[in-house]
Length: 344
Image 1 (cartoon, one colour):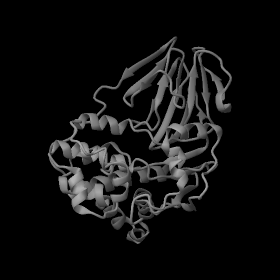
Image 2 (image 1 turned 120 degrees about the horizontal axis):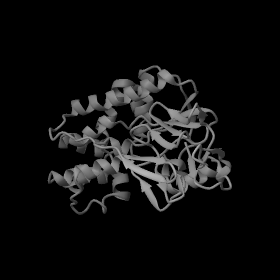
Image 3 (image 1 turned 120 degrees about the vertical axis):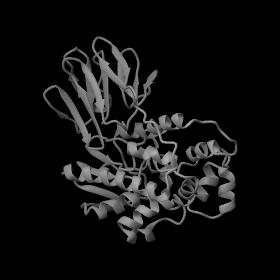
Image 4 (image 1 turned 45 degrees about the horizontal axis):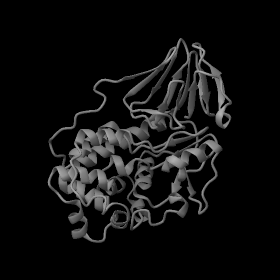
């Protein structure tokens, strides 16, 4: 789902396929797009992009866009950092020049009422069931799931099992998988591309977005708890060993040592503008742990939040409901079995 729109004809980057729009701009696309009467389309139900080329260029996506967009006076693209970035609520249109507008009331207002653990469980269950179910009802490509002990991957896998969706598992290689040249460029700036292979004409199910959208990013949780007068460092220290402890100590304890005043509105914007993975050539990615309704989890009661950020209790409850046999596959510690290339 990679593209570049240019006011001038250029040497095609990464061997992208060149098209000329009716407004005399040039559109360069990676493989996997289909051409319709007046637009190009690529994607699946939960992650797609549509680029109109007649009468002018207009870029449309699903509400929670999975890729960044950058632009300058002469170019719009999603794989090369240019002077300005379009946030997820931005709309790009190109006539003789690039015009950026914004969708009104894009970010939802979150209730101040505290959500119980059961309410949070139901929210998460309904969101993932909807994402996976809608995908499965339309998908005709083979689906692959990595054989991995990560809580997010296993949450997705449990729902696939619950809905009786056919898939094959594959081993995560000890050697970094080869990507096309464009993929190599993307993984320099986007960590998601460090962890995935390309499999021709297929869909790979991922656990991406789980930390950020399901209350397990410690810094995001730190922002919520700071507003409630709760010290996340003390909570981890008092608990001791837990699923997230090693990850917390290595990456977040120092970062979360001081109280912050991030508003919930700012946090929602940060979550929605966190871009991790998107379709690459004819390899598509299903990442169902992302849904607009999950922002309500930011109003979870404090015990639910602490249980999730330390021991993934909310995520485990989904696995227990959908396929409890997978509980024994969960790593004892977050990321403990990750190959070294995930970080390189």
